[in-house]
Length: 474
Image (cartoon, rainbow, N blue to C red; front, side, top):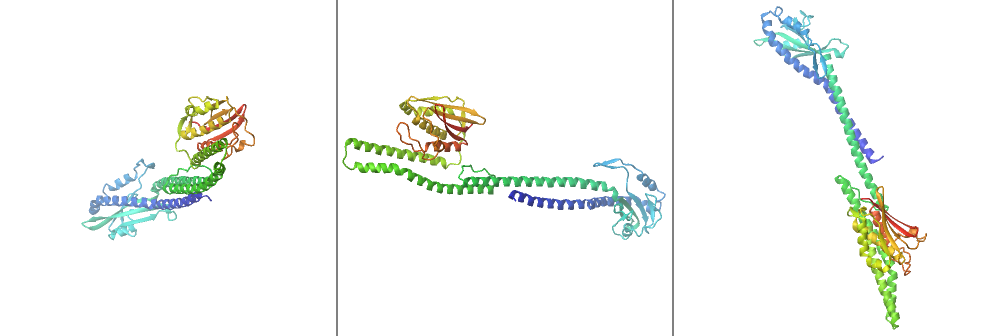
Protein backbone atom coordinates (compact mmCIF):
# COMPACT_ATOMS: atom_id res chain seq x y z
CA UNK A 1 0.00 0.00 0.00
CA UNK A 2 1.48 3.41 -0.94
CA UNK A 3 2.69 5.59 1.90
CA UNK A 4 0.27 8.39 0.97
CA UNK A 5 -2.71 6.02 1.22
CA UNK A 6 -1.53 4.69 4.57
CA UNK A 7 -1.08 8.22 5.92
CA UNK A 8 -4.53 9.18 4.69
CA UNK A 9 -6.14 6.10 6.27
CA UNK A 10 -4.48 6.83 9.62
CA UNK A 11 -5.54 10.48 9.36
CA UNK A 12 -9.04 9.41 8.28
CA UNK A 13 -9.44 7.11 11.27
CA UNK A 14 -8.08 9.70 13.69
CA UNK A 15 -10.16 12.62 12.37
CA UNK A 16 -13.26 10.46 11.83
CA UNK A 17 -13.23 8.84 15.26
CA UNK A 18 -12.31 12.08 17.03
CA UNK A 19 -14.97 14.01 15.13
CA UNK A 20 -17.59 11.35 15.82
CA UNK A 21 -16.74 11.23 19.52
CA UNK A 22 -16.79 15.02 19.92
CA UNK A 23 -19.94 15.41 17.82
CA UNK A 24 -21.85 12.68 19.63
CA UNK A 25 -20.78 14.08 23.01
CA UNK A 26 -21.91 17.58 22.11
CA UNK A 27 -25.18 16.26 20.65
CA UNK A 28 -25.91 14.45 23.90
CA UNK A 29 -25.20 17.62 25.86
CA UNK A 30 -27.67 19.75 23.88
CA UNK A 31 -30.80 18.36 25.53
CA UNK A 32 -29.63 18.76 29.19
CA UNK A 33 -28.12 22.12 28.27
CA UNK A 34 -31.45 23.43 26.96
CA UNK A 35 -33.30 22.05 29.98
CA UNK A 36 -30.82 23.66 32.36
CA UNK A 37 -31.16 26.98 30.59
CA UNK A 38 -34.94 26.71 30.72
CA UNK A 39 -34.86 25.78 34.41
CA UNK A 40 -32.75 28.85 35.16
CA UNK A 41 -35.39 31.02 33.45
CA UNK A 42 -38.17 29.29 35.41
CA UNK A 43 -36.35 30.06 38.68
CA UNK A 44 -36.30 33.77 37.83
CA UNK A 45 -39.96 33.70 36.78
CA UNK A 46 -41.22 31.86 39.87
CA UNK A 47 -39.36 34.12 42.29
CA UNK A 48 -40.84 37.18 40.59
CA UNK A 49 -44.33 35.67 40.96
CA UNK A 50 -43.66 34.91 44.64
CA UNK A 51 -43.15 38.60 45.31
CA UNK A 52 -46.22 39.58 43.27
CA UNK A 53 -48.47 37.06 45.08
CA UNK A 54 -47.25 37.68 48.64
CA UNK A 55 -49.63 40.47 49.67
CA UNK A 56 -52.80 38.82 48.34
CA UNK A 57 -51.84 35.47 49.88
CA UNK A 58 -51.10 37.12 53.24
CA UNK A 59 -54.42 38.96 53.20
CA UNK A 60 -56.33 35.80 52.24
CA UNK A 61 -57.83 37.49 49.18
CA UNK A 62 -56.02 35.52 46.51
CA UNK A 63 -59.15 33.86 45.12
CA UNK A 64 -61.04 37.16 45.05
CA UNK A 65 -58.21 39.18 43.50
CA UNK A 66 -57.68 39.95 39.87
CA UNK A 67 -54.91 37.32 39.62
CA UNK A 68 -57.14 34.36 38.59
CA UNK A 69 -58.36 36.44 35.67
CA UNK A 70 -54.85 37.43 34.77
CA UNK A 71 -53.69 33.80 34.78
CA UNK A 72 -56.64 32.80 32.62
CA UNK A 73 -55.94 35.60 30.16
CA UNK A 74 -52.28 34.64 30.13
CA UNK A 75 -53.16 31.07 29.16
CA UNK A 76 -55.19 32.30 26.19
CA UNK A 77 -52.52 34.53 24.66
CA UNK A 78 -51.16 33.73 21.17
CA UNK A 79 -47.63 35.20 20.89
CA UNK A 80 -47.13 34.51 17.15
CA UNK A 81 -43.39 34.64 17.76
CA UNK A 82 -40.71 33.54 15.27
CA UNK A 83 -37.78 32.37 17.42
CA UNK A 84 -34.82 31.63 15.12
CA UNK A 85 -37.06 29.87 12.62
CA UNK A 86 -39.29 28.13 15.21
CA UNK A 87 -42.89 29.38 15.43
CA UNK A 88 -44.37 29.86 18.93
CA UNK A 89 -48.15 30.31 18.82
CA UNK A 90 -49.20 29.68 22.46
CA UNK A 91 -47.88 30.11 25.97
CA UNK A 92 -46.87 26.94 27.80
CA UNK A 93 -46.31 27.92 31.41
CA UNK A 94 -48.66 26.49 34.02
CA UNK A 95 -48.75 28.40 37.33
CA UNK A 96 -50.23 27.20 40.58
CA UNK A 97 -50.17 28.54 44.15
CA UNK A 98 -50.51 26.54 47.39
CA UNK A 99 -50.86 27.57 51.00
CA UNK A 100 -48.45 26.60 53.75
CA UNK A 101 -50.02 23.12 53.94
CA UNK A 102 -49.59 22.40 50.22
CA UNK A 103 -53.23 22.83 49.21
CA UNK A 104 -53.70 24.38 45.76
CA UNK A 105 -55.33 27.79 46.02
CA UNK A 106 -54.90 28.96 42.48
CA UNK A 107 -54.21 27.06 39.24
CA UNK A 108 -53.82 28.77 35.85
CA UNK A 109 -55.22 25.62 34.20
CA UNK A 110 -58.21 25.63 36.59
CA UNK A 111 -57.94 21.86 37.03
CA UNK A 112 -56.43 21.16 40.44
CA UNK A 113 -57.73 23.88 42.78
CA UNK A 114 -58.23 22.39 46.28
CA UNK A 115 -55.96 19.40 45.70
CA UNK A 116 -53.16 18.51 48.09
CA UNK A 117 -49.75 19.00 46.42
CA UNK A 118 -47.74 18.70 49.61
CA UNK A 119 -46.30 15.37 48.50
CA UNK A 120 -44.97 16.67 45.17
CA UNK A 121 -41.23 17.36 45.38
CA UNK A 122 -41.43 20.94 44.16
CA UNK A 123 -43.92 21.91 46.89
CA UNK A 124 -42.60 19.55 49.55
CA UNK A 125 -38.95 20.69 49.26
CA UNK A 126 -39.91 24.34 49.07
CA UNK A 127 -41.99 24.09 52.28
CA UNK A 128 -38.92 22.49 53.88
CA UNK A 129 -36.87 25.56 52.98
CA UNK A 130 -35.01 23.83 50.14
CA UNK A 131 -34.87 24.36 46.40
CA UNK A 132 -38.00 22.73 45.01
CA UNK A 133 -38.01 21.23 41.54
CA UNK A 134 -39.34 18.10 39.87
CA UNK A 135 -39.93 16.49 36.49
CA UNK A 136 -43.09 14.44 35.99
CA UNK A 137 -44.44 12.63 32.97
CA UNK A 138 -47.95 13.45 31.85
CA UNK A 139 -48.04 9.99 30.25
CA UNK A 140 -45.99 7.44 32.23
CA UNK A 141 -45.27 5.49 29.03
CA UNK A 142 -44.06 8.50 27.03
CA UNK A 143 -40.61 9.85 27.99
CA UNK A 144 -41.23 12.91 25.81
CA UNK A 145 -44.24 13.96 27.92
CA UNK A 146 -42.23 15.04 30.96
CA UNK A 147 -42.93 18.47 32.47
CA UNK A 148 -40.44 20.53 34.49
CA UNK A 149 -41.71 22.16 37.68
CA UNK A 150 -39.86 24.82 39.65
CA UNK A 151 -41.26 26.27 42.89
CA UNK A 152 -40.40 29.21 45.13
CA UNK A 153 -41.57 30.06 48.66
CA UNK A 154 -43.91 32.98 49.38
CA UNK A 155 -42.67 34.51 52.63
CA UNK A 156 -43.91 36.98 55.18
CA UNK A 157 -41.32 38.20 57.66
CA UNK A 158 -39.17 35.16 56.86
CA UNK A 159 -42.01 32.71 57.39
CA UNK A 160 -43.21 30.53 54.48
CA UNK A 161 -46.91 31.23 53.97
CA UNK A 162 -47.29 29.51 50.62
CA UNK A 163 -45.64 28.15 47.49
CA UNK A 164 -45.85 29.25 43.86
CA UNK A 165 -44.76 26.85 41.10
CA UNK A 166 -44.26 27.27 37.37
CA UNK A 167 -44.11 24.35 34.94
CA UNK A 168 -42.81 23.99 31.38
CA UNK A 169 -43.53 20.94 29.16
CA UNK A 170 -40.37 19.39 27.70
CA UNK A 171 -42.09 18.91 24.34
CA UNK A 172 -42.09 22.68 23.84
CA UNK A 173 -38.28 22.60 24.00
CA UNK A 174 -37.93 19.79 21.47
CA UNK A 175 -38.04 21.98 18.32
CA UNK A 176 -35.11 24.04 19.63
CA UNK A 177 -33.20 20.90 20.62
CA UNK A 178 -33.76 19.31 17.21
CA UNK A 179 -32.84 22.52 15.41
CA UNK A 180 -29.58 22.79 17.37
CA UNK A 181 -28.78 19.12 16.82
CA UNK A 182 -29.50 19.41 13.10
CA UNK A 183 -27.30 22.48 12.67
CA UNK A 184 -24.57 20.93 14.78
CA UNK A 185 -24.74 17.73 12.72
CA UNK A 186 -24.32 19.65 9.45
CA UNK A 187 -21.54 21.77 10.89
CA UNK A 188 -19.76 18.77 12.40
CA UNK A 189 -20.06 16.77 9.20
CA UNK A 190 -18.73 19.74 7.23
CA UNK A 191 -15.77 20.13 9.56
CA UNK A 192 -15.00 16.42 9.39
CA UNK A 193 -15.16 16.48 5.58
CA UNK A 194 -12.97 19.58 5.53
CA UNK A 195 -10.48 17.86 7.82
CA UNK A 196 -10.48 14.79 5.59
CA UNK A 197 -9.99 16.98 2.52
CA UNK A 198 -7.03 18.69 4.16
CA UNK A 199 -5.66 15.29 5.15
CA UNK A 200 -6.12 14.02 1.60
CA UNK A 201 -4.36 17.04 0.13
CA UNK A 202 -1.55 16.68 2.65
CA UNK A 203 -1.15 12.98 1.86
CA UNK A 204 -1.26 13.71 -1.88
CA UNK A 205 1.38 16.44 -1.53
CA UNK A 206 3.63 14.28 0.62
CA UNK A 207 3.32 11.17 -1.56
CA UNK A 208 3.77 13.30 -4.69
CA UNK A 209 6.95 14.82 -3.30
CA UNK A 210 8.26 11.37 -2.38
CA UNK A 211 7.36 10.07 -5.85
CA UNK A 212 9.26 12.94 -7.48
CA UNK A 213 12.25 12.24 -5.27
CA UNK A 214 12.02 8.52 -6.06
CA UNK A 215 11.89 9.20 -9.81
CA UNK A 216 14.89 11.48 -9.45
CA UNK A 217 16.85 8.78 -7.59
CA UNK A 218 15.86 6.14 -10.17
CA UNK A 219 16.88 8.41 -13.05
CA UNK A 220 20.17 9.21 -11.31
CA UNK A 221 20.91 5.53 -10.73
CA UNK A 222 20.20 4.86 -14.42
CA UNK A 223 22.68 7.58 -15.39
CA UNK A 224 20.08 9.88 -16.96
CA UNK A 225 20.42 13.64 -16.69
CA UNK A 226 17.63 15.02 -14.54
CA UNK A 227 17.19 18.15 -12.47
CA UNK A 228 16.73 17.98 -8.72
CA UNK A 229 13.01 18.39 -7.91
CA UNK A 230 12.14 21.57 -6.03
CA UNK A 231 10.54 20.35 -2.82
CA UNK A 232 9.04 22.54 -0.12
CA UNK A 233 9.20 21.61 3.51
CA UNK A 234 12.29 21.46 5.67
CA UNK A 235 12.81 17.72 5.96
CA UNK A 236 11.87 16.94 2.35
CA UNK A 237 14.13 19.70 1.02
CA UNK A 238 16.98 18.44 3.20
CA UNK A 239 16.39 14.87 1.98
CA UNK A 240 16.46 16.05 -1.64
CA UNK A 241 19.70 17.94 -1.05
CA UNK A 242 21.21 14.89 0.64
CA UNK A 243 20.26 12.67 -2.31
CA UNK A 244 21.68 15.26 -4.71
CA UNK A 245 24.93 15.44 -2.76
CA UNK A 246 25.21 11.65 -2.66
CA UNK A 247 24.54 11.47 -6.39
CA UNK A 248 27.13 14.14 -7.14
CA UNK A 249 29.77 12.39 -5.11
CA UNK A 250 29.04 8.95 -6.60
CA UNK A 251 28.80 10.32 -10.14
CA UNK A 252 31.98 12.28 -9.64
CA UNK A 253 33.88 9.22 -8.48
CA UNK A 254 32.60 7.06 -11.33
CA UNK A 255 33.15 9.83 -13.85
CA UNK A 256 36.74 10.43 -12.76
CA UNK A 257 37.49 6.73 -13.11
CA UNK A 258 35.91 6.60 -16.57
CA UNK A 259 37.53 9.88 -17.59
CA UNK A 260 41.04 8.81 -16.55
CA UNK A 261 40.62 5.48 -18.32
CA UNK A 262 39.44 7.17 -21.52
CA UNK A 263 42.08 9.87 -21.41
CA UNK A 264 44.84 7.29 -20.86
CA UNK A 265 43.61 5.22 -23.78
CA UNK A 266 43.37 8.17 -26.18
CA UNK A 267 46.71 9.68 -25.22
CA UNK A 268 48.62 6.48 -25.95
CA UNK A 269 48.66 6.91 -29.74
CA UNK A 270 49.93 10.52 -29.99
CA UNK A 271 52.37 10.01 -27.14
CA UNK A 272 53.78 6.92 -28.81
CA UNK A 273 54.18 8.86 -32.08
CA UNK A 274 55.94 11.74 -30.30
CA UNK A 275 58.21 9.40 -28.38
CA UNK A 276 59.13 7.44 -31.52
CA UNK A 277 59.91 10.60 -33.46
CA UNK A 278 61.98 11.95 -30.58
CA UNK A 279 64.03 8.75 -30.39
CA UNK A 280 64.69 8.86 -34.13
CA UNK A 281 65.71 12.49 -33.97
CA UNK A 282 68.50 11.60 -31.55
CA UNK A 283 70.43 9.93 -34.40
CA UNK A 284 71.87 11.24 -37.62
CA UNK A 285 69.43 11.67 -40.52
CA UNK A 286 68.92 13.82 -43.59
CA UNK A 287 67.52 17.32 -43.05
CA UNK A 288 64.31 16.56 -44.96
CA UNK A 289 63.63 13.48 -42.85
CA UNK A 290 64.43 15.39 -39.66
CA UNK A 291 61.97 18.13 -40.71
CA UNK A 292 59.28 15.50 -41.30
CA UNK A 293 59.74 14.00 -37.84
CA UNK A 294 59.69 17.46 -36.25
CA UNK A 295 56.44 18.13 -38.11
CA UNK A 296 55.03 14.87 -36.74
CA UNK A 297 55.90 15.92 -33.20
CA UNK A 298 54.24 19.30 -33.75
CA UNK A 299 51.05 17.87 -35.25
CA UNK A 300 50.74 15.19 -32.55
CA UNK A 301 51.31 17.82 -29.86
CA UNK A 302 48.51 19.96 -31.31
CA UNK A 303 46.34 16.85 -31.42
CA UNK A 304 47.07 16.23 -27.75
CA UNK A 305 46.21 19.82 -26.87
CA UNK A 306 42.99 19.69 -28.86
CA UNK A 307 42.05 16.36 -27.30
CA UNK A 308 42.64 17.64 -23.76
CA UNK A 309 40.71 20.88 -24.36
CA UNK A 310 37.74 19.07 -25.85
CA UNK A 311 37.73 16.46 -23.11
CA UNK A 312 37.69 19.23 -20.52
CA UNK A 313 34.79 20.98 -22.29
CA UNK A 314 32.91 17.69 -22.59
CA UNK A 315 33.55 16.85 -18.93
CA UNK A 316 32.20 20.24 -17.89
CA UNK A 317 28.97 19.70 -19.83
CA UNK A 318 28.48 16.05 -18.85
CA UNK A 319 28.75 16.83 -15.15
CA UNK A 320 26.06 19.51 -15.27
CA UNK A 321 22.51 18.53 -14.42
CA UNK A 322 20.90 21.69 -15.77
CA UNK A 323 21.45 25.06 -17.34
CA UNK A 324 22.96 27.89 -15.33
CA UNK A 325 20.69 30.38 -17.11
CA UNK A 326 17.75 30.43 -19.50
CA UNK A 327 17.63 33.54 -21.64
CA UNK A 328 16.34 34.42 -25.07
CA UNK A 329 19.17 33.85 -27.53
CA UNK A 330 18.83 35.56 -30.97
CA UNK A 331 20.05 32.79 -33.28
CA UNK A 332 20.83 34.86 -36.37
CA UNK A 333 23.06 37.22 -34.40
CA UNK A 334 24.74 34.26 -32.70
CA UNK A 335 25.56 32.61 -36.04
CA UNK A 336 26.81 35.96 -37.48
CA UNK A 337 29.15 36.30 -34.52
CA UNK A 338 30.43 32.75 -35.02
CA UNK A 339 31.01 33.25 -38.75
CA UNK A 340 32.94 36.44 -38.09
CA UNK A 341 35.18 34.61 -35.62
CA UNK A 342 35.78 31.75 -38.13
CA UNK A 343 36.16 33.99 -41.20
CA UNK A 344 39.88 33.19 -41.65
CA UNK A 345 39.24 29.45 -41.76
CA UNK A 346 36.19 29.90 -44.00
CA UNK A 347 38.24 31.88 -46.51
CA UNK A 348 41.08 29.37 -46.28
CA UNK A 349 38.66 26.53 -47.05
CA UNK A 350 37.28 28.56 -50.00
CA UNK A 351 33.65 27.96 -49.03
CA UNK A 352 30.67 30.27 -48.65
CA UNK A 353 28.33 30.26 -45.65
CA UNK A 354 24.76 31.60 -45.92
CA UNK A 355 22.95 32.67 -42.77
CA UNK A 356 19.26 32.24 -43.65
CA UNK A 357 17.96 32.31 -40.07
CA UNK A 358 15.17 34.91 -39.64
CA UNK A 359 16.18 37.93 -37.57
CA UNK A 360 13.40 37.38 -35.01
CA UNK A 361 14.19 33.70 -34.40
CA UNK A 362 15.18 33.12 -30.78
CA UNK A 363 15.70 30.08 -28.53
CA UNK A 364 15.55 29.60 -24.78
CA UNK A 365 18.87 28.50 -23.35
CA UNK A 366 22.42 29.25 -22.27
CA UNK A 367 24.14 31.43 -24.88
CA UNK A 368 27.71 30.25 -24.22
CA UNK A 369 26.87 26.56 -24.63
CA UNK A 370 24.82 27.16 -27.78
CA UNK A 371 27.71 29.08 -29.33
CA UNK A 372 30.15 26.26 -28.52
CA UNK A 373 27.76 23.68 -29.99
CA UNK A 374 27.35 25.66 -33.22
CA UNK A 375 31.13 26.14 -33.41
CA UNK A 376 31.61 22.37 -33.30
CA UNK A 377 29.00 21.86 -36.01
CA UNK A 378 30.66 24.50 -38.20
CA UNK A 379 34.07 22.88 -37.67
CA UNK A 380 32.75 19.53 -38.87
CA UNK A 381 30.99 21.10 -41.84
CA UNK A 382 34.15 22.92 -42.92
CA UNK A 383 36.18 19.71 -42.59
CA UNK A 384 33.85 17.73 -44.86
CA UNK A 385 32.86 20.42 -47.40
CA UNK A 386 34.63 20.53 -50.77
CA UNK A 387 36.41 23.71 -51.84
CA UNK A 388 33.98 26.15 -53.39
CA UNK A 389 31.03 24.59 -51.57
CA UNK A 390 28.20 26.53 -49.97
CA UNK A 391 27.11 25.93 -46.38
CA UNK A 392 23.71 27.08 -45.19
CA UNK A 393 22.31 27.87 -41.72
CA UNK A 394 18.50 27.97 -41.55
CA UNK A 395 15.74 27.45 -38.96
CA UNK A 396 12.02 26.66 -38.77
CA UNK A 397 9.43 26.85 -36.02
CA UNK A 398 7.32 23.97 -34.83
CA UNK A 399 4.75 23.90 -31.99
CA UNK A 400 6.76 24.77 -28.89
CA UNK A 401 10.07 23.99 -30.60
CA UNK A 402 12.41 25.26 -33.29
CA UNK A 403 14.78 23.36 -35.53
CA UNK A 404 18.17 24.97 -36.24
CA UNK A 405 19.91 23.25 -39.15
CA UNK A 406 23.27 23.40 -40.92
CA UNK A 407 23.65 21.96 -44.43
CA UNK A 408 27.00 21.16 -46.01
CA UNK A 409 27.48 19.79 -49.53
CA UNK A 410 29.92 17.04 -48.52
CA UNK A 411 29.83 13.37 -49.30
CA UNK A 412 27.06 11.27 -47.80
CA UNK A 413 27.73 9.67 -44.44
CA UNK A 414 28.05 5.87 -44.72
CA UNK A 415 25.07 3.99 -43.33
CA UNK A 416 27.22 2.07 -40.85
CA UNK A 417 28.56 5.33 -39.39
CA UNK A 418 25.28 7.24 -38.95
CA UNK A 419 24.22 5.65 -35.62
CA UNK A 420 27.74 6.03 -34.18
CA UNK A 421 28.61 9.63 -35.02
CA UNK A 422 27.70 10.91 -31.54
CA UNK A 423 29.76 8.24 -29.78
CA UNK A 424 32.78 9.53 -27.90
CA UNK A 425 36.05 9.27 -29.94
CA UNK A 426 34.28 7.94 -33.02
CA UNK A 427 35.27 9.88 -36.13
CA UNK A 428 35.39 9.52 -39.90
CA UNK A 429 38.51 10.37 -41.92
CA UNK A 430 38.64 13.94 -43.28
CA UNK A 431 38.43 14.01 -47.10
CA UNK A 432 41.39 16.36 -47.48
CA UNK A 433 43.90 14.73 -45.13
CA UNK A 434 42.49 11.30 -44.34
CA UNK A 435 43.11 11.99 -40.65
CA UNK A 436 40.46 11.59 -37.97
CA UNK A 437 39.46 14.19 -35.41
CA UNK A 438 39.16 13.67 -31.68
CA UNK A 439 35.62 12.33 -32.12
CA UNK A 440 34.35 14.52 -29.28
CA UNK A 441 32.68 17.38 -31.15
CA UNK A 442 29.30 15.80 -31.95
CA UNK A 443 29.22 14.11 -28.55
CA UNK A 444 29.61 17.57 -26.99
CA UNK A 445 26.83 18.99 -29.20
CA UNK A 446 24.51 16.14 -28.19
CA UNK A 447 25.16 16.82 -24.48
CA UNK A 448 24.39 20.53 -24.98
CA UNK A 449 21.16 19.68 -26.82
CA UNK A 450 20.03 17.37 -24.03
CA UNK A 451 20.86 19.99 -21.40
CA UNK A 452 18.47 22.33 -23.23
CA UNK A 453 15.74 19.71 -23.38
CA UNK A 454 16.33 19.16 -27.10
CA UNK A 455 18.02 16.69 -29.40
CA UNK A 456 20.69 16.39 -32.09
CA UNK A 457 19.71 14.94 -35.48
CA UNK A 458 22.05 13.98 -38.33
CA UNK A 459 21.29 12.58 -41.73
CA UNK A 460 21.99 12.54 -45.41
CA UNK A 461 19.89 14.80 -47.61
CA UNK A 462 19.90 15.53 -51.31
CA UNK A 463 23.22 17.11 -52.23
CA UNK A 464 24.93 16.68 -48.88
CA UNK A 465 24.57 16.26 -45.14
CA UNK A 466 22.26 18.06 -42.72
CA UNK A 467 22.71 18.31 -38.98
CA UNK A 468 19.93 19.84 -36.86
CA UNK A 469 19.51 21.03 -33.29
CA UNK A 470 16.01 20.80 -31.82
CA UNK A 471 15.62 23.53 -29.16
CA UNK A 472 12.78 24.99 -27.09
CA UNK A 473 11.22 28.16 -28.45
CA UNK A 474 11.65 31.45 -26.60
